[in-house]
Length: 155
Image (cartoon, rainbow, N blue to C red; front, side, top):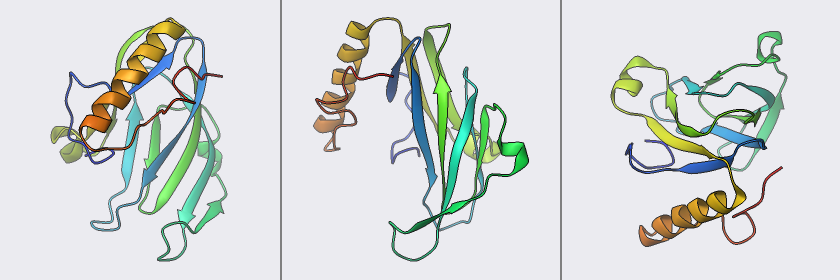
């Protein structure tokens, strides 16, 4: 599961605008199993901006961890140990289309621990698709992902 949802190749879980950049937080908050998840984001390389680790039973208490030298360059796979979160920045320069984010642990990949995200080339399409994602989430009883202040926001 990613964000509590099984993979569905017809469901788009995130949409970004070509030419924009975004910061994403990847989180491995599940304590059970003690899995390190090597998260692979197709199409785009990014940079790890920070790494944090949970330091208590309180789910909101984290401590910054110094980045290792090998974490400072551009990459498309992000090691995510238990109770770690990484903030990464990516820029979507050239292409539009459908892409995946998935765990590179073979049995997780085989069990479809992945999600689809799309790159679009207009603010109108970005806004429309983000509204569709929020409507689908609310119909499923989940909170909106974008909300009215984030539907067409990009940097």
